[in-house]
Length: 129
Image (cartoon, rainbow, N blue to C red; front, side, top):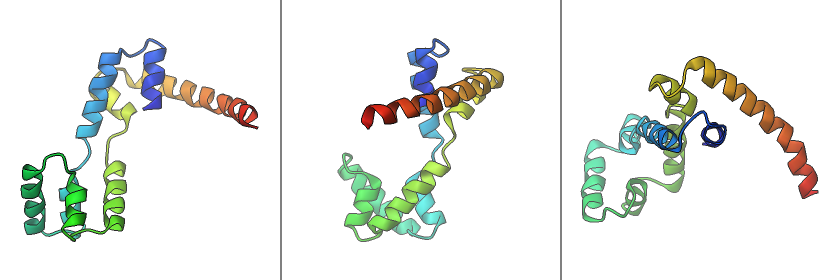
């Protein structure tokens, strides 16, 4: 997310394009229920029970319902969320794949961003000392 804000701040990406790219990135995440079934933490029947509950209480998250029903533990949920994040497309990949920026621009800007982030770290440490 910080890299995306860097691109916006440097005029390489509009705020609107950044928002669209973030939405696309979030859509690339596998659904939690699917991961839970693939990793054998839930059965299909349990997943449908959770989804039915979620229809009745849409403000509750899938994982919260699964824990409340005793289908998942907090540890199970945390592991699934970590796996879900690992399977999500990176923002640079989304930017290139959907034509927001070319691979060359993304690679160049990411290198510049990483370099500037590393140089800013000692200043932050001195300020906090």
